[in-house]
Image 1 (cartoon, rainbow, N blue to C red):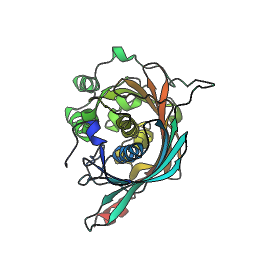
Image 2 (tube, helix red, strand yellow):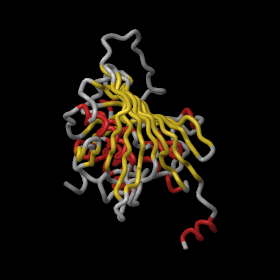
Image 3 (cartoon, one colour):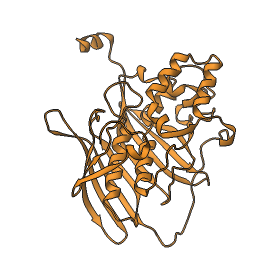
Image 4 (cartoon, rainbow, N blue to C red):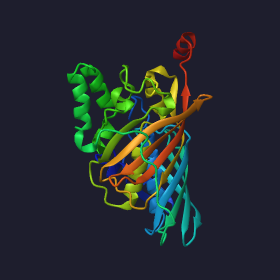
Length: 328
């Protein structure tokens, strides 16, 4: 099987080709750029899927921490090698290396991830979680994400060609997910950094600015392994460029902007992204060419079910003379 996936379940699907070694059934795809570089969430999902298939069903993923070692290409499949670190009655730990074969037949690592699993606890002492940082428009009051963006075009806020480019750059998200965008979020007001205009949060420090969305998988995920991998896929989205968007800047304003590492944490054992969830983004700190940002996820019951944090590289553009020399 080759080519691009049509559903999220296909995108996160893996096949064990030998003990502890897996291959994706489909090639990763790009999102947010036009280069032959795959969206990082494809590698995250691959690592999670392979690790989940290596543990018995009574174990539940609760943490996946990894480092991006290099970009994955969009014209070849991903491979994952799983190493068993720990297996007890309560916990299991896996180390996963995600790689791709190069044109010369060698293997190049794209990501290394450490994942922890735990069996269901019989009881708990405390159950609690934070709420979102601010109040957003209720889910039922919002049109679909695409209708919201089309409204910006119809109001003359966004040019049709800009909207069309945004749709092409983020086509994979539209293919796999239904979404709604609260108008209070900066990511919506600035169309993921595609436009520059005043926002309702311009008076706030960058660390107090937020963006948010509602989403669910467009095609049903049938297994818990697909749920966990799908969650990793979606939670990776946008975190590297949140600091730019919340500064009313775009990817074109930076010399380099991409994820360096991530930590995905699950707080419940029954995440179901077939149902609507609410996600909120913010950036926490930046400096030394790096940023640190977070997204948090709640279900319809108001439970915080997961979060992801990332450090990302954020470099300025080189001076014009250096850019000209680099182009030679």
